[in-house]
Image (tube, rainbow, N blue to C red):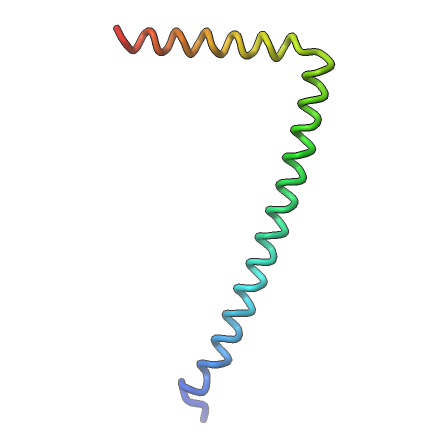
Length: 75
């Protein structure tokens, strides 16, 4: 009969193996996420350089709305 003390090393090894696999998967997903973000940023940068006016208008409208919200909070 296997005692609890004899099961501990195999349980620790299994836990360590699962932890390593989880860490590997997390690092893999993080790398994929960084690649996607870099690609999206490059696409946005390219589009903004091709036609900057929608970006300028969007920033202007956002600043205007933010200013209105800040101004209203003082009343």
